[in-house]
Length: 217
Image (cartoon, rainbow, N blue to C red):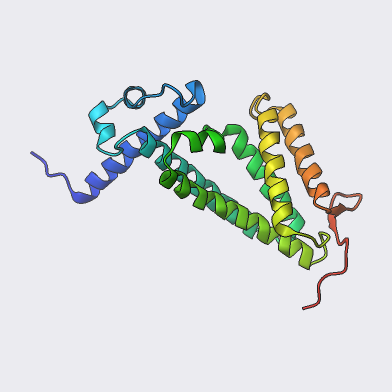
């Protein structure tokens, strides 16, 4: 009988876990969270129910793991994209676009619904990751104000207003087919609406312009 190396065993466990999380996400998208069971996930993943319990004790633990995995992936990709841009208004536009695109395809329930099905401890773990997104947005806004591309104001209040607008917009654009011209038009309009609402100005070519004198170093 061939020996199973530690490396191959680790790879197999990682693949099984990936299949479980993928199946869970697909089921969230097609039928939602209410009534979803570990048996459903196991069947959709093509593995035994006992195998799912080897990785996750219950649906709450599975939901948290899926949410953390999705959020970490999104934050990493967003940071990489922001790092390739110098202008804070361009960064704000990318942030808005990325958030709307993610929210339209995200299978997770909205925040209040998550709070209703998770323990306080589990919900706090998710809140820490959501806080990363808020911190990114606030840093973009601070840079924009410091460089004169945004009028100076209350960064925290502006960030909350932007995030609230993003959430409400996502619920509207979900009616459009992914990749459709209608969806792209809605996202583009949302980007310009929020950026302009934050005080950004643009020239005739759509490039960001300085709207107030930059802060002195």
